[in-house]
Amino acid sequence: MPAMLLRVVVLTSIYLLALTSLHPGDVLVGLVLSTLVLVVSRRVRPRQPPPSTLPLGRRLAGVPALLGGTLVDLAVGTWRTAACLVGRGPTWAGLVEVPIPRGGEVSAAAWGVRVGFVPDTVVVELDEGRGRMLLHVLDASDPEAVVAAQLHSYERRQRRVFP
Image 1 (cartoon, rainbow, N blue to C red):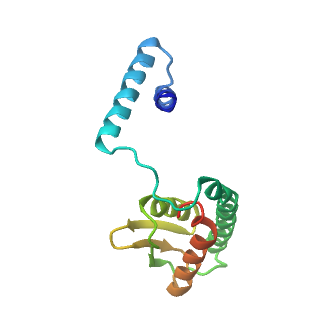
Image 2: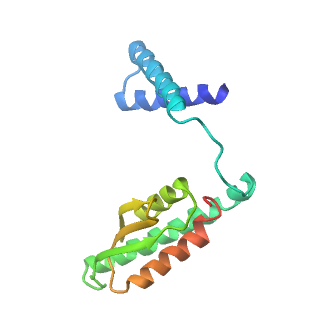
């Protein structure tokens, strides 16, 4: 029950921040909407534990590597994009299809978000059913190298946290 109450408070807070209002009527409407969203979402898709074989502590231990690696990818991607913009980098932009390792919807979505942070890649499509992620990359001159780099990044940085 405390978790449900916390979710109502968080959703109501987001609602009030979006409204930029603390009028009692707005607070009441936010509480009602938040409660309805949570009740309906539980009925639509019952809450289930994540299908992970790794213990939570071990998964959390991988978070610093995931965050640090994402920051490194962000810095490298920013540098490559800046070099391309000033005319000193490759400009063979194109689409590359990257296979998604079987890990579930949460893992694929987290990978798509993480890859989308980097300025030299844009996630065009994430198809869990076909097991692929379509990326638009700044340098698509060697698609195999792009696929290898993405899979290596996934294995080293993300797989431990989102198996």
